[in-house]
Image 1 (cartoon, rainbow over the protein chains, first blue to last red):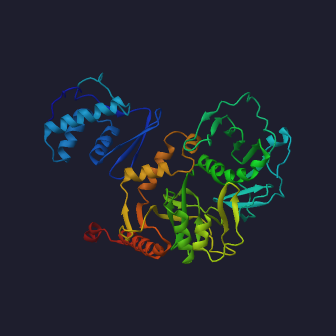
Image 2: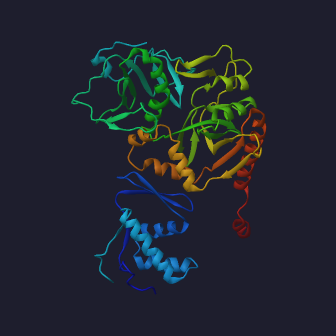
Image 3: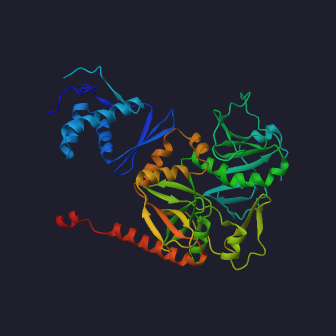
Length: 104
Length: 349
């Protein structure tokens, strides 16, 4: 089981797609439009899998567990990269990370 | 021909029954305006009417336009869009204002000498905007019919979309469109709609590609391209929409010194999306016509079904047969890959 607290994100926090975005599946990749800014973003195949889990409302820990189970990747690096990706997506208002959720 | 219709008359819905009607982009357009382009007459019930007026239509409650800029690219073609409850107004300041209802387009022409420009705008930006409002975005592309399917060539710098279309037409393939390709999603697939039976070719293109260009007219005094009617003297025109098989992004290389091969390579989804977005017709205006994100969803769905390929080929009319052969071979490969049986299904059987 992954740790419940990452460097900057609580593992129990649910992650959801942001309100002001539209995304589309491009096969292996995902394209996201931030409506207010009109900016487009693209996620590669790994990022697209993260986005799929985000769309399901998974928590940070659930996303991390899924990624570790599906990809041959070092756990520490996976956690670091995932945290960075989620924080970047949050900064661009493409996802919402609910830090107020109760740790079950 | 400008009609000096009164403001009241111009604001009334409907159209005179005797108005001639034409097929264009899968729509039936009724108008008294003397269209110079080679449009096919239609006897179907009109989807919309078009009229040109010297006066602005009456818009109750509309005090002043609150236009937002909705264009990009070369000045001075800046469009401004005002979306009112019942009508969208697109303005090209100092030239004309366009009013779009669900079944009617009115152009308020400020300068009568721009009448020819107005027709070009009608058959380009105005109708693509009208289609976008119906959920039918358009690409800046030519397309021809090959084996009952549409094959499109996106408009790119030095790409030669019309040259490629003409090349296939010379081999007997019907033209679907020369410049604007509306794409309709229906029943889980995507169809390219027919434009109208006309090509626009530069004089040197026409001279190289057509046997007789002596009787051709220029599109406009400022646009030194020939208007080439399709059907009577050259080529044939597709009978209706066709399923979109493939979109090519043509890139013409200088033939001297470099390799003379024709290269076709698939575009990754991200690059393909970028190209479709960039090569949409009147991209910002079209995006403004519909809720944000609609186009992204449309192009995303399209890309899950229709491949986009980069087509790199040497410049020169003598290379066109090789380009055609390469495209045919590529289309055969695409079809074969679709027909290939799924090995998992074979095992289960």
